[in-house]
Length: 363
Image (tube, rainbow, N blue to C red):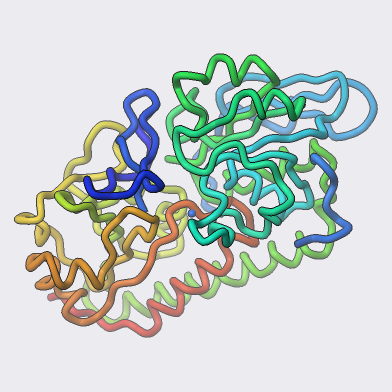
């Protein structure tokens, strides 16, 4: 699997090492409903193999859900003991479904919740592994899981499920994979909603509908901001999304990332790299060639292990010379945000505000 994340610097700590499963790049880059929680428990440009017609709702009798691998997970009853990648668990949490166990970046080194955990109470879930490839299989088995849930970037590999133990892990319970790359953001959010509904979520609950309304409002605001940005110059405001390691500047291909694809559908203009590596997620540029593309705004992958703008400006002259950097127009990019209306509404609002505050700095 080639995940949508670059390699981290060689000097990155063990806590920043990332996926290697099926060809993935080798280091991690640098994403409460109270009583509504059940114990564990549009751009429209891309569809998966899943569909509500094949998914049963929670209730008596057989439960089934067709995932984005085209595989139907089945159980004699609605799964209750859910174990999920932390981002998937956070999305389900926003919809009223709580998980028993999680894996992936859940806690920071200081013990505080990782932002990717969203609203999960990280002290009340069993953490099977906080960094890749940690996944305590014995502890997982001890949870007697009814269902394993993870996102995917290149099916059929499940995100953060280690290759060396994947067969054993996936033999212990049915699994569901939701594709979160090269698809539309609204479709992915909808797939998590379908899954949550099948598990017993009430999608008409006030927190859920309020988050959806905020998402719609934020999207309309971003569309207006993007239109106003285009009026500021002949080519509008050009936005470039990147990630940075010690040796490489990774330029994101907008079509590979669900959020970039959605923002483009609302009128945001992204720099598109001329060629990408295996998987189609990034173009890798040496620092000598970091000025290959110019942009009015640069969004920088803010995951642990990636170099951030302040350090880059001091240590990478080609970065410091970029027009957006000289104009102090660099902003964080939460690559692994949870796929829910509640997760993305604030991100869309932030991007809209950034566009409104910016002026063209390239010719």
